[in-house]
Length: 135
Image (cartoon, rainbow, N blue to C red; front, side, top):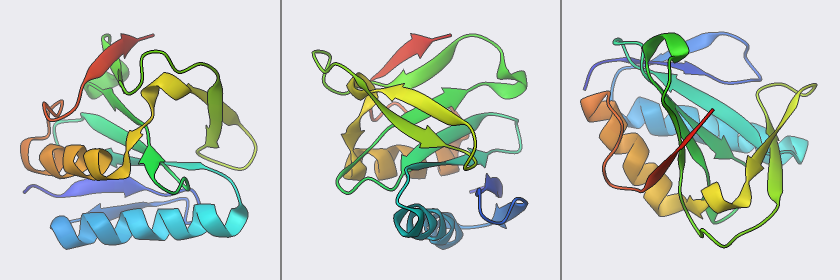
């Protein structure tokens, strides 16, 4: 795996995850912060090629992911869970600007972790989950 730059809201600087354990430690740090604040948070993992995968943390059994190519060019993708789900969940990269994520993007935490692990190895859009384009 190539190192990933990790952005977590609380520390406001990027960490470097050099192996799978570092990736999961950074994710756990972000989840702990989200649980202690009582708010869902977003943690970003950026590969050396500029591609970024983001996970919503702070839920218990589910998460949602987004994927952006380097330079934040189209297409962008959201994970695809229950197509019939309605409404949204609020998450934030900081405490001031909530972002609404459609409930249809929620997937199991296990599937989200598998996608993160695949991204850490390939630095590309993970194929282990379904995605839908968004703008």
